Structure formats: C-alpha cells, structure tokens
Image (tube, rainbow over all chains, first blue to last red; front, side):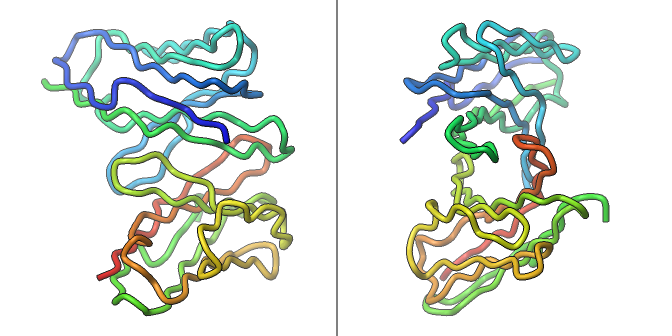
Length: 113
Length: 112
C-alpha cells in the first residue's frame, strides 16, 4: 500500500508570510499532484510534477518533486487570505494506466489578514 | 453543465437505510472515479470506471457498497444498510486524459 504523509497538518499564519508544506512517502510515484480544496467543494488540481527534481511555479506557488520521486513540497510566498484552504498532495500509481491516485491527509492552511 | 455534477449534495440516512448517490461527469470523459473523504482526511479511492466497465473496485470497503455506470456516462454509488462509519463526503471525478481529474462538489452523507 502506498502512503503519503503531509506535514504540517495545520498551518495558521499572517498575511505576507511564507510557508512550505511537505509531502513524503517511502514509495515511488510516476507523478505527483497538488490540489486545493475549499469547504463544501471538490479538490481542484493546481499542478502535476512528473520528473524527479522538477520545479514548477504558479504565480506565488512553487512546487518541487524530489529527485527520487518519493516526496514533494509546496512553497507559498507572501501568503494571502485567498490562499486559505485544504492543500492535498496525491501520488499516481504507475502500475495503472489510468492514474489511480493516493492522497495525503491534507494540510489546512489559514491565512489571517 | 460544464463541470462534474453530484446529487444529492447532502443526505441524512438512518442506520440501516439504503442510499444512492449520483454523478454526472463532464461530457466526453471516459474515466470516472469515486472517492470517499472522511472529515479532516484526504480522499480515499473507492472505484474506477472506463466507459461502462468497472475496471477497479479495490477500494470499496465492503460488499454493501456497489457502483455502476451502465451507459458509460452517469454513475451511481449505492450503499446498502448504511452504518455510522459510512458518514463521509463521497466525491466523483471524471477525466479524459490520465491523471487530469475534475472533481464534483461531493455528496455529504450523514448516517444517524
């Protein structure tokens, strides 16, 4: 069974601060995704990283895939209240052609004005 | 609509009742997934359809859970004889390309 551990579970910061969320596993994934989920909504895909060592930037968000494709991080620069939400990492099972996803337990981010 | 549509959004059931949750995927999306999300947790895989074929049901927690997609479009997740531990948000997702999942808003089931 593939497991993904996210840390921290909860993060409460002030507007303008920087933060990093980590996603770790002992398993290798063919790709790793980050989602953001707001209360009462389904997760929304932010990014997919595929290659070990890959770095992707999405405005103030920077995503990195570990060299061994077992871990990933999400860094947010100058957080804003609109960044508040549940951040989920999800690893794709390379053993299936349809990209079966294993999710971490999530990081609840609260950004205070 | 343009997105994945799920109904009902909220369902309260008494223990022992049967429930049916519906998912209307994005038109043209071949793949359809059901996930279960307990409070404060990430989603957990339940089952996968490619068109009308159920290719993976390894995540269904018991034989009380049954999913179908008879015409390769709308899917229904049925839970028989509901138990309190079945209380969760049930998420449906569809995709055209592997790995690019579009999730619905979910159906929140509360079993009393």
